[in-house]
Amino acid sequence: MNPERGFRSIRFVPLPGAALAALADQDLAAASAAAGITLTPYFITPEAAGLWRLRIADIAANADSARWIARATVSEPDGVVVGHAGFHGPPDAAGMVEVAYSVDPACRRQGYATAMLRELLLRAANEPGVTTVRASISPDNAGSLATVARFGFIRTGEQWDEKDGLELIFERAP
Figure 1 (cartoon, helix red, strand yellow):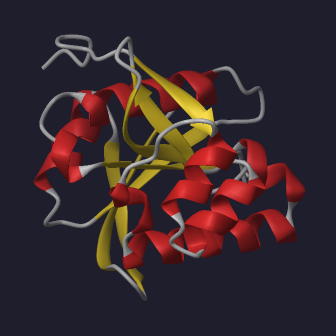
Figure 2 (cartoon, one colour):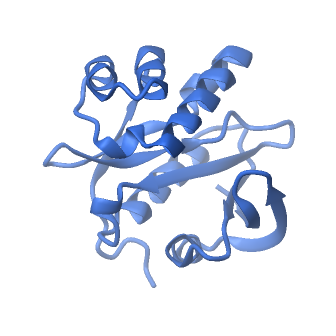
Figure 3 (cartoon, one colour):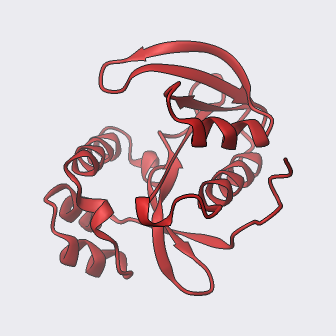
């Protein structure tokens, strides 16, 4: 399947520290004000709050992480927030970055994950230090497995994640 077919137009909006802190506190109004966009309740689920706390810690440990991690994903031209995407952090010593994307359940099966992954791959390709893009996916996540397959990711292994359980590892060049 051609990943360009049915392509959605999106843009990423960085989530500044104040927005991440508000999201971690599950304060949607304050997070939206800090981000300058209307975020959805999907951003303040208990699971999401843990993600934002993790990203705050990532930035505290390495300020360069801020330009790599989670961003709100906005559908264009309507300006609706449809999820979030980014990388787990900057490239490691070998030049590997890991993608992370999540579509609001109200917006799934509309091509947004494909659009997010396409934009993340473009970003990785434009970074000289990136040699490999990785995706770690639960074997039960058929949608995400299909999405990475459309972009030529190759399964390279598996790992056990303490929070998410078994994950299949896929990689490709940027």
